[in-house]
Length: 299
Image (tube, rainbow, N blue to C red; front, side, top):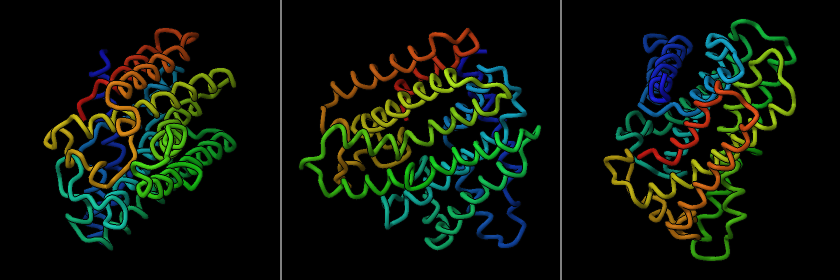
């Protein structure tokens, strides 16, 4: 199958798994469960669960062994978007072309929906893995996702990003910006690849390190390209207001390097990511193609 066909297959697969894992909207508390489903099923490319499936596939792991890790990482991603959009954070009204969760419902419900999505991710990862992996392997997967989500990962990156907004046009350098996005965006992408790898019964350290370097590079490239899209892509394509980074006075790669150099950096990162997979066979080809997709996407 082509990468496009694989992505559609895995997007549909994780959709089905998420539908099973999430509480039904007819279960009390109704509004909270409806908001949780709204946040998860409000579109999106499902890049992170796709990475879980593609990594596992490269290591010959069966898709059914990857379903729960893929769903768990998407639940974490969905929760983070709900909280990022809140008035106290980015204060966005649109997400994927639709009203953000706090606009579709209310601010308190959105906060609770994010909280509930986060805890559900760890519940399914600890209780619903099929087939059951050895306890230590399951604990390592939970550790990886927890570390990527917390103050030393995604949440910490968001805190650094908020603090950096007041430094727009000042002394924030490229190394500091990279540190923000290694945490804010890159941590969960790296966790996605690790969860796919850790679903493999036999995994050597060299293979895991190579995959982790691949993930680090595409995670940074993903953010660089996001910054570029915020400048170049129209609102109707982005699904959120164009130029929101400038509106919020955020330091971005284009604001530091310019558009041309930012595009070169993204390409360099993708080439480095692909180089880290040199000892993998053709089963890793979709991972190589996904790296190119990261900086070719329109939103």
